[in-house]
Image 1 (tube, helix red, strand yellow):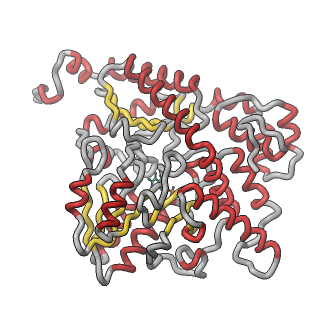
Image 2: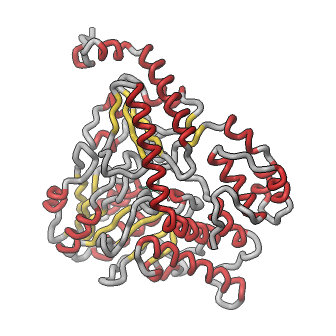
Image 3: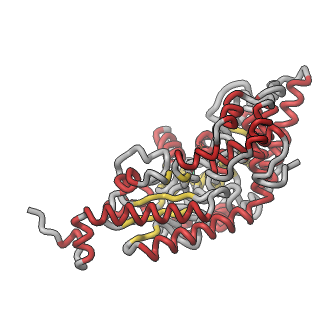
Length: 460
Ligand SMILES: Cc1ncc(COP(=O)(O)O)c(C=O)c1O
């Protein structure tokens, strides 16, 4: 049973969760009485500690969170669902001999159904993992290894997530042939190019549903249909798409799909893998152990995390349309605000076929890292969290044909169900202030205003 109102939550544990979420969202002050009530509740120390803080102070001390593709805040309803399994219901879901185990198992099975319902699958086709990284590893290496004797060719895109690319590289070292397809300027794969890449030896196509850095949506339904017609298995990394856009494993002809909990307001450290039963997809999992999750992912299932992922999927199923409309509206507000005030900005990736709430923008003559340093009131990133430590320009933007100069100036903004219009307006001001300041310092900006480019400069 879901507690209806997002921030008017009644039960005591919910108050704790609401306070944490309100702090995350930089939103309303939790009334003192409610906070005091929460302190008396039997919840983990960290949560009660968060409630005893004056959460109204947090928005002033923390930047506005605009990095929701890296991770999203935990939904208070998700935390509510998880808490009992972190305290009194601590049984191992694989323990068959007592009620502690049975209760945990029942909760895991409920979560399995909640995940399945979100993607039109059967619960028997869902396997819990530690996240999309592990799911991608199991999917690619598992399908590859099972088919190796007969088919040893894999097709993927140059712009896939590192964990997909590295899993493919690993298989290359094991003797597989991998084709890394280019994408068009808008970040989307050309279906003709994909069709031409398929061979009689192709066992798997792996193509992500929504991009973590540039937000573009690949035509997965068409890719799935193509793969089905050629008897090639289709895997999609849906870490970013799950819960944000409609996914239906049957209509989309998906055979294997990777999911992550923390991108959909669930806990970190949890994910799932969908593996089709009819026609049956077989894989040889690279994880060895006790055979849990029917041998696909050995290791004790993390009950509280799995329960949280299930709850997050149930909320997403109910609220996806509302969330998408909200994120799209704020995305448009942000883009319109920036475009009306700043010339020479470019959105990277297709604007129409795009994850609601994602914008990846290059600001001409502005160095991305300097912009990030100056934007002290906004938490954004220059690309994916996994590669943002590197000073190399994004391999994803380079694959789109973005030149090194512009790839260095890109910033990714991710909007969540908690982002407000007011926050977007502050973000616009921060961008305008910092971009104008950096451009004033840039000799390249003067050149650009004079109608010249870097290519016109004569270096001595
Ligand atoms: C597209 C994509 N795939 C895979 C991952 C890895 O997910 P996780 O953090 O659950 O391992 C991410 C997260 O950054 C992602 O965005």
